[in-house]
Image (cartoon, rainbow, N blue to C red; front, side, top):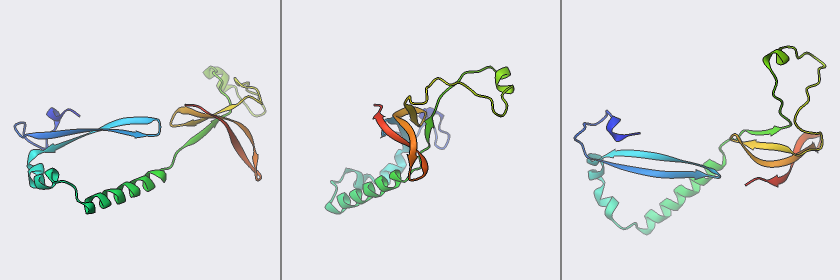
Length: 140
């Protein structure tokens, strides 16, 4: 966001803008934070002091909790068995017991997709009585 568009403070107020890069796995983005100088003035002493051992311990605790919580974020995983492009007319004519030919053969590897990107290739199968996908290749 452009700080010129922020309406919570006057245009004459001095602000500090911090931009952070965020990377989680292969996904990267950024965050910009705009902080009015008046807020920073109240904690100026803390910001310019050297961190104590207590501060470092607290920081490690926070990082540990953040790592733990990020690890619990749910991901949607899709196993793409095949793809087919068809016209709306063809789609509307699909009925029970029709066969749709897709772009893969039965024994071809299938794509395992995370966040709209193919991350793995694998084979369909059964594991302990459940349908499963065995990862055979990691896509970088």
